[in-house]
Length: 110
Length: 120
Image 1: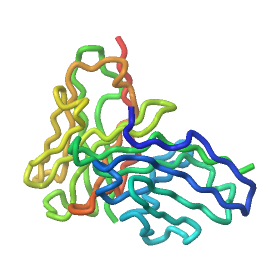
Image 2 (image 1 turned 120 degrees about the horizontal axis):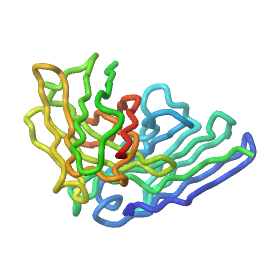
Image 3 (image 1 turned 180 degrees about the horizontal axis):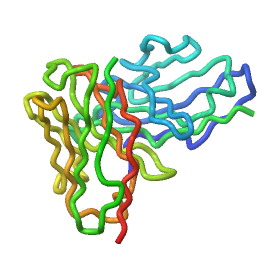
Image 4 (image 1 turned 180 degrees about the vertical axis):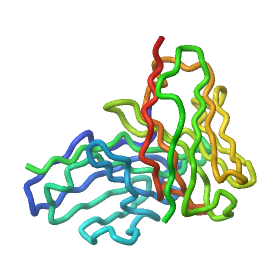
């Protein structure tokens, strides 16, 4: 059972915006950097956001990240059908001395 | 750009030991800048971080797997490996090898994954 909680699913129409929350605690999100991963169907995950709000080269600015206290949020604007995927947050947990992933959120484009 | 490739058996019998290797190209396991990481994903389920190894051989493990797990590194072969003892059906998953930077750790490069099924 993950220590990071995400909503199981979110959906919106093409062109709209979705936000995915990731809730943790002071031992993980509260005191460590958050990263986000996109997993398209049948493929390996890909790093989408790191250090709470930075995008690796090649990731469009439609994807954004933020963190406040013990929660983090991934935002996707201008939703496209190609954004249909599972999204995971991740961070180091200082109590566990291990990296932890969120429960995952499936994004559906209506 | 670094590339990671998992190798190992696709089928393991219950109670046996799983041994997987990850070959690294376009990067070096001798680098002081990265951790080398294993992650798994049961079918239809979420990601589970297994553990990581540094070029010095230092490791960090998922506490839930620590008693059965060994991750090692062979810089001469530019590879790192996973051994998981006493496999059960619950260990059936796609296993990914990956890389993450030292410091502000995240997983920035992934292998394609290899399916390991535990069955008699």
